[in-house]
Amino acid sequence: MKERILDRVKKLEGLRDGAFHYEELVQRAEYIEGEFASYGFAVERDEFWFNGKLHWNILATLPGSGHGEDVILLGAHYDAVIDSPGADDNASGVSVMLEAAKALGPRKGLKCIAFTLEEPQADALSFLVGSRHFVKKSRSMGERYRAVFVLESVGYVSHQPESQQLPPFLKASRTGDFIGVVGNAKAGDIMNTFTETARIHVPELKVVTHRARLRGFLLLETRFSDHAPFWDAGFPAVMITDTAMFRNPHYHTPYDTSETLSPDFMAQVAEALILTVGELL
Image (cartoon, rainbow, N blue to C red):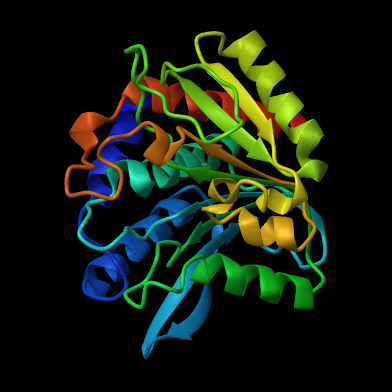
């Protein structure tokens, strides 16, 4: 498993922002589409225009499945911030999501999505563009999500003391060797299931949870990924994260490369996610 995950990270990493490396972003999208299709999923492009260019989220579903069903959604963004190869942020999240999709396979009640344009765009004001578009469209179509898992930077770990920074008023270990699960008020059962599943089946994976109040507006850093539009729409959603800028010194820099990541850690996260979603299904 860990070899597959790392191999995908290497194929996904590289400059791929929507402004200056659009063709490279399209290449990553086509790779993800091919992976989903090879696992037996029906693949659909959720298209939209942004700054004069066509972009799309990539949706993978059970062939023949309809709309308006209660589903579990797995998501991760495949774009990278300008001037960074984005191995941790977020090739790691996409690769783990693909591993979960491969293991779970197409089945009723499961959908996967690779979001685009999550990162701040060249105008410095627009971000979460793909997920905002998708959630707005989902609501208009009457989609219902009983659990949303968003994988956001899940590959960097450090066992050095004081390697973990923390936002104000948040208590957790100062050693960056855990995975964080950040959920809204409706996501308590999701967080509990993930934590308990990891404790029993993946005991080497340390899990720290945080329940965000008021949709995360009391701690804005908890809203910095594609789960936030789902919170705003009232769906139970969690962000699974290595805490990104609070741990990884290469965050949003040219040094965010696959060589800095832990295949073992990513495989542990994948295993816990697969078992959790399997239980919820």
